[in-house]
Length: 234
Image (cartoon, rainbow, N blue to C red; front, side, top):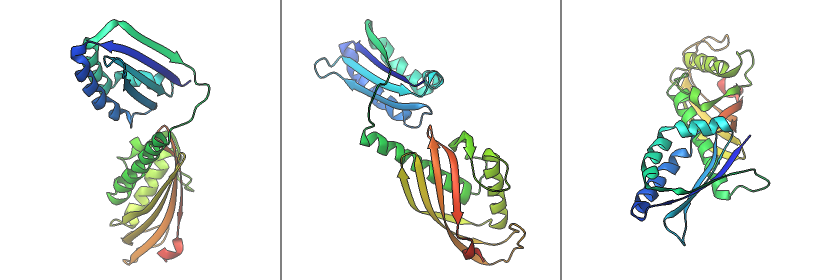
């Protein structure tokens, strides 16, 4: 069940700037934190010593992971010594209705596009099929035929392509995000130096284009579909 919490506290006047600076350093680190839906921090205009935090997490496990993070512990070490312990109010909330601010939605979609860029850079252009596992959800589905399920199927597909086209260079021509989906239009160039699905190497330079669609869950790729212009490979 999602967790929504409002935390209010007052700090010593001498610690206001220190805590403000700590918040400004802390909150941006949460943009890529798994399970963190949103995190906002404000300072009262009427009382500059009073701070208000609003945060939402996917579930208890996400919240617990957040409190164990290095970023949280660093922030805690700064603000706790400055807090008036008798003036801390924490309110747990249940969401009834709401809407996502356009800026927050844009930030989420920008994050998804950055994940796709990282995947293309490492998996396709650096030909490293192992160091992208952190980008994928544990329940990932790849939609390739005759490949093992999950990330291992994607990994084996990458190994097959690396064998056939060891010098492949792929370019993301367009990235379009909508909701939890990202569409990538690619172009690629490579030399056919190894076997590919029964076709012997031709040593020819080949070019092709394709469309890849990624679905995201909790900031990670949970499903992928790919369409490649195979006629361009002939």
